[in-house]
Image 1 (cartoon, rainbow, N blue to C red):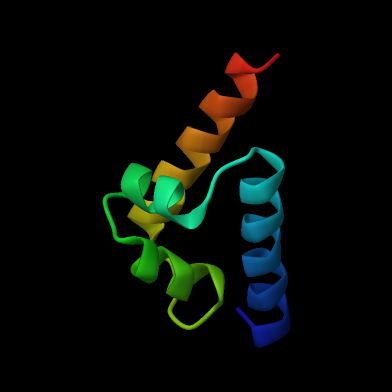
Image 2 (image 1 turned 135 degrees about the vertical axis):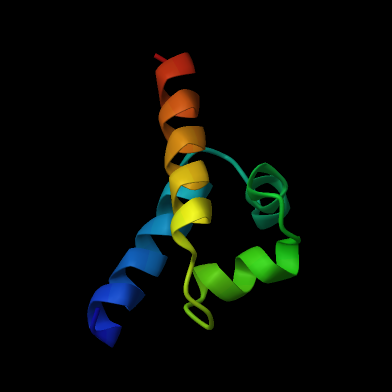
Length: 68
């Protein structure tokens, strides 16, 4: 994945998190990582693992479904 696409992806993670009213600590808790570790992923400093990406996807889909 090139840097521009990953930066766009990280930005979308931030936008959706904020749109749903969560902070980084909330998302980190759902993924089983610290707020600091989540921040590093959201800011593109380290790549998010497939497992954490899947957990994030499941969490966001569940949250959006419950709010409808």
